[in-house]
Every structure is written in structure tokens, then in C-alpha cells.
Length: 382
Image (cartoon, rainbow, N blue to C red; front, side, top):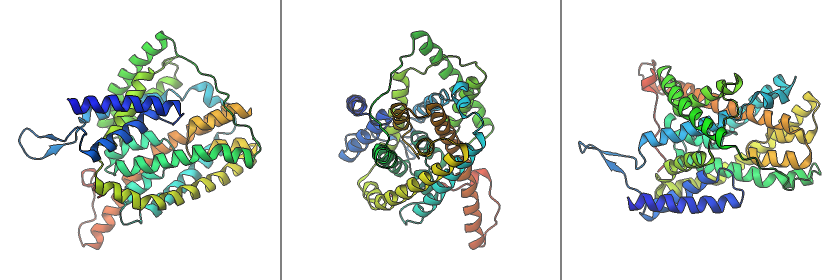
């Protein structure tokens, strides 16, 4: 109990500090760093022993982790509002095509990272998918990847994008990106309705998602239900309470952080230089796709760049607002990109796993048939 109390208190304090520094998804990053530090120091909550004495369970109970994923799914889903998507007007086709191009870049980068002897292909592909960093960390465990590696690489990606964005905006486009954002606080009624939406979307989404064998049902099930509620008007002005979102982020960070060991930390340290190079290349490629989007849609080159920036959506929106850009177009394009990445990534990972297992079975002279239950589960990095 004391270990959990210490984890919660230190995470809360770190979240406040990081939030003041405008770190994206501050609670998730705080949860990851604090849990990892405590785990490495031997002060984190310990693994739980099974009642029959046959093995152990992770420190964080699975239902709590699934609940954290569900909250995040609902939170992302509330961004998909008809008024925002209307900002694309007649630009749907180019935005989707360019978003697919960004996905191809990410997959190619992930495949190259997966060639590293300390990274399995699934983890490599998820670590470099350019969109929905917190969502990808949440679903990595469900797909059998190493969530520690994915969490670190994803947040290095977000950090690099966030830091480089104002530099590129100023030096390349001559745009002003100073702070010019307004904050909006949801009313108590909207938050209460958001709480009810959250409970209903999680219950329905996870149940139906498991019945239809949806990959990462804990995240994608509630996300799908919430998107439907938003697009049909059922969600109305519902807003997920900030406290609940913060708790969900922290839980996802703990899931990854509590699994850290000295060996895994050294392994990630060896992989990180390769990941940084690939992140930079993906960023350059995305900027090129942004130029193509600008030519295709007639939007400015800066708007095209912001619309295709591979991460840091809140920093992107702040820059768009401060520079007087077409913020509805940028926001809608970014949401389409995030949704596309979150939905396509798990299905692509599942298909790749099946292909890889068939190939390995053929090489070993074994039957090539693969069922859903036979999908490989890669061991964590060590």
C-alpha cells in the first residue's frame, strides 16, 4: 500500500510540474518516468503472486489498465466533432491520401527500426507510427509488443516535433508562433454528461469489441462508440472530466514504467540513436507530404506543414492559432491522421504477425495455417 501511495503522490507532483512546462500528455509522461525510476530503485509496487502459486501478475491489475485505455479512447473520440471535420470542406480526398502517405513513412521507419537486433518488428512498427502516441502506448501491451520501448520512442518523437516546430515555422515560413491560445473550461453539466458518456462508451465499446475480436478493444471499442455518438449528435457538449483524463494517462504511463529493469533500460539506450535518426527522416518526409497537400488543396505551405506534422497536436494547434492559420483545416487534418493511425496500426500489426508466423513456419517445415490464437506474442526487450 505504501508503495502505491508513494507512486501516486510523486506522479501527481511530477504531473503538475510537467503541465506547467507545457509537456504534452503530462500525466502519462510523469507516470512513465516516475514508475520507471521507482522500479529501477526497487521502490515500485511489486508483482502479484497468483493464488495457486504458479507465477506472478503485473503490479497494475489488468482491469485498471483497461479502464485507463477506455478513458483515453473516449477522450480522443470527443475531438471528432462534426463542426471540426466540416473544416475539410472539399479536401477530404487529399487529406486522407496524404495521411496514408504519412502512415507508409511510419511503417517503413518502423520496419527499419525492427531490423535492430534488440527490437522485434511489431514493437518497431508501433514505436514509429506518427500519430496518437498515448493511444499507441496503451494498445501495445494488447498486441504483444514492448510497451516500454514504444513509450520511450513515441515520446522522443513527440518531444522532437514539439521542439522543432517553432524553429521550422520561424526560419522556414517566417511565421509567428508565440503563445496565443485561449482556455475553455467545460461546465459542471457538460462534465457530468461526459462522465456518463465515458461509462457507457467503455462498457459498450469493450464488450462489443471483444465479441467481434477487435484489436486493442480496450482503447478502440470506446473510441468507436464515442465517435459515433459525436457524429450523430448524441454526445452533445459532453466533456470528459480533466481529472479522469489525467488519471487515465497516469495509469497508461504506470503500465509501461513499472516494467523497467536495468537490462531493458540499457537495451532502449542502445536503440534510441537509431530511432532518433528515423524520427528525423519521417519528419522531413512528412514536411514534403505537407507541401504536396498545400499544392493539392490550395492551402498555404505553412498550413500544409502543420496539417502533416507527425505528432504534437496541441503544439500544432497553438502554432496555428498564433500565426492566424486555417485552424479548422489543420485541426481536422490532424484528427484524421490520428484516427487513421490508431485504427490502421493494430490491424496492420495483426496481419503482419500472421504473415511473419506463416513465413517462419514455412521455413521450419511446419504447417502454414495460423489462427487468431496462434499469433505470436513477442517477449519484452531485455
